[in-house]
Image (cartoon, rainbow, N blue to C red; front, side):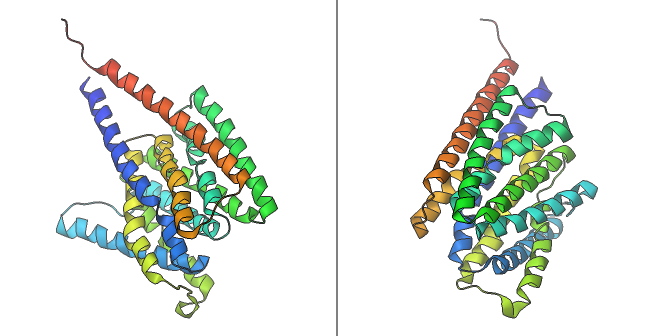
Length: 303
């Protein structure tokens, strides 16, 4: 009984940490757009600052607070770091090659990728309701991709789909390892920084009109949000972690519409509405299911 109650407490803790990280992530794309930079310059500066923030935070934890936290926890950690590196590159390329709405709607497929990978790698078999949700969401993604072909931003949509798959893989392997992966996505910024620096041809090739937004993004927003989202799989399942990216799906297009007056196409909206509806329905079902499970564990006293 005690173990089951502890699991419930850990689950609540994971939900709170991951929700905060997901909320912080919703302002990532608006900050990238506000910087008025190109894709490779944004990738270079954002990733470099995130990597530096990770080293500073790790040094403080290790030498000031005297806590021994490994930067890369073994081979599993190295794999997760590599996956976050690839996901970051694909994400930045998608930001500058498709609309914000299309990007975040496609990234919302992340929980379904996570569910399939968790079944394959961790043995967490999805319920029939999850499979049904996947099919509905797949239809929404296909609508957005087909609309992207007409609009000429197919490459950006495919980058978004690739980023979603790689990110789901990172979450799943973190869940499988069951160890502290909080610094994995932050250290994963090193490779994108090197790639971006190479593509722009050095410091002289950087194009940034408003660097303050990239500094805010790279030093504060991304380190905090990625640490929270990477810590989540230690306490809750991969699909549950992935579902908190739904916050970005809902809010990022709103921020971009308010700041840049960028409105999605009608087909993109329809596809996004299908994806969001399916995800919300699935999330509500999972929440109710978890509450029922917790109630069954509660001790019953005779009247």
